[in-house]
Image 1 (tube, one colour):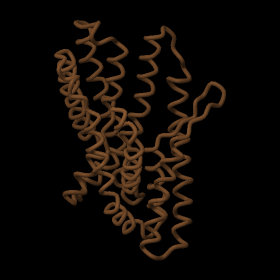
Image 2 (spheres, helix red, strand yellow):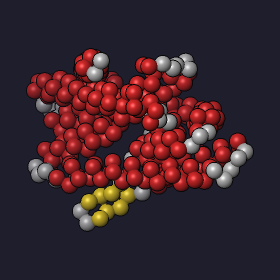
Image 3 (cartoon, one colour):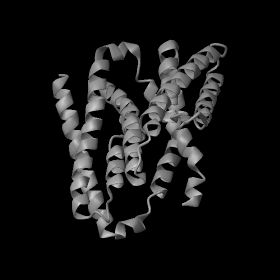
Image 4 (cartoon, one colour):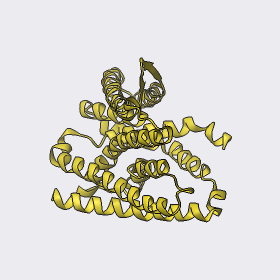
Length: 286
């Protein structure tokens, strides 16, 4: 596990490239058609999944309070919001999928991470408060809101700088090199964390890179071609990302029957929440 954690930078960089590709989907021309629907579906399916997991695991907690304490229930419920953008994007790319569903799907998956970040911070803050016996309003509400705001601001500034720099280069290879450099730079800056009084200012590399991609793609005329070339260059890093994700799974944990039971309940409840939340919000937004 120590060896795997030492390669964390590869996963962070891969997610950075994936987030930039996601940002490419937030083109103003498309958002005018599907923006409102994407926002409603993204928020609703994420929250319904959290509620479904929280309720289901709370029932398990009532029967097995020692094996599944309440703080764990809240934390697992918060994790249920997030949808991994990597797998979704890879499937879309592999099958060269395009159409109304795909154009709606990718912004939803991207927005899902913003919702997930907020829900996780709030749920995890409440879980810590239950464990410590006191609630910290700064870590529950202030820090996550600041993290989202500063990440979007940093991403927007990086996107403007990215667009400004690319205009000075005309060869494909140089533009490609600049693009790769900016993604690495955005991921590196996202690792910064500092305190201003009691408030912790941190960045989400997913949000920073997503915002950078959004701003760049809406400003740059040749962004489509550049993103296509970048996508081919980054394939080996994406493969490493999935290999490392698999390497982090400790199969010995699954020998515990209680863990298996909690896992099955979690998967069923999360799936039911995501599907029903998506179905109801899609019906509501036509």
